[in-house]
Image 1 (cartoon, rainbow, N blue to C red):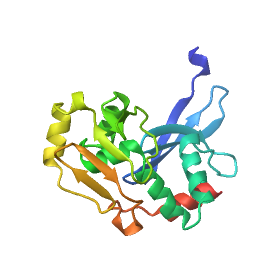
Image 2: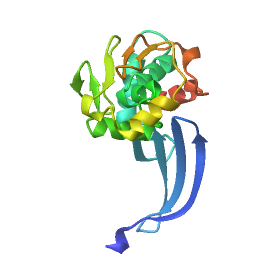
Image 3: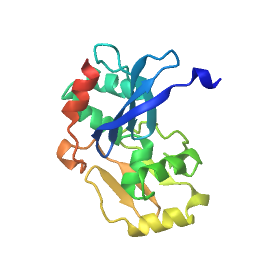
Length: 195
């Protein structure tokens, strides 16, 4: 089956940010034609997508759904998009300091260590609602990765309320744009997805 494999010729990073990375690969197809592939990495998902002849990107579905949800809401689409990403369960686990990194937060959620309103939720892309209580499952509170992360975490956010004794936090509100610490030009993302 090796005669059906694409051969990578060239790879370049187009954009590299904290929550989004775009890489463009030039590949040779099995029939000898040259094609372009875009790899878009963002919080919680990786996808390989193709470029059309006129340079438009065929985008990854999960992030597209989040963008579509943001564009349907009233307000500034880019800011709403960031707010929706901030409300993902894996991101909240990271923001509360339960996990040291977003990938670690995703793994804790996947393995059933995290609860939402007292019930185990194992879907990292779960969108929390304002007022939800995100906590560590009782039997997971002694895990070294969690205790080390909580002890070493000092950066708290105004839209989150943390109870270090109970190892749980409340999602108080969606963050304002200025409260999100990452340096992201969300307008570029909006322009990319609006095409």
